[in-house]
Amino acid sequence: MTRPALEDLAVGQEVARREITVDRARLVRYAGASGDFNPIHWNDRFATEVGLPGVIAHGMWTMGAAVGVVSDWLGDPGAVVDYQTRFSRPVPVPDPGEAVVEVVATVGAVDAESRTARIDLTVTAGGSRVLVKAQALVRLT
Image (cartoon, rainbow, N blue to C red; front, side, top):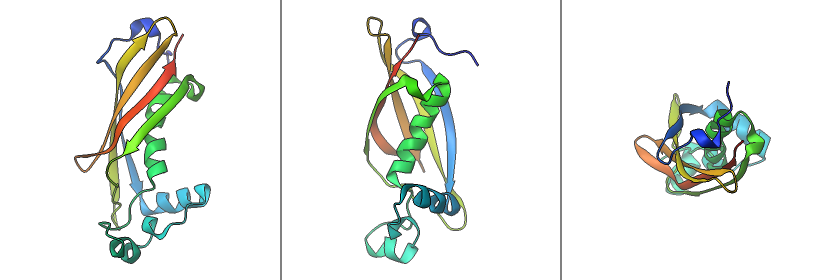
């Protein structure tokens, strides 16, 4: 895979796109890895009692899955020098079944002097944006 070069980027250019699935088993594995055992991520009864539509994916899982699309495109996770987002909606995860998170990465800005680009992420699930203002600053060759 050829690493992207700054000179090949243009504002508005789509650089990556991916659909990522998440099911209850993945939530359990993520809870174990992260130490986040909040019952909204595994117990339907509890999740609905606190006003959620059911079990939801961890916000940090969603955030990490989205930026993974950028680091895979770059071929180097160390090239992501900053990443920020806001959570706008939860990602409900059915049982049985899975939720699908779609990530589209486009060039939002290019800074030739600093050799960086801002990559804007559109992150949706079920037709709704689940992350807003999701932006990764990347350093390119």
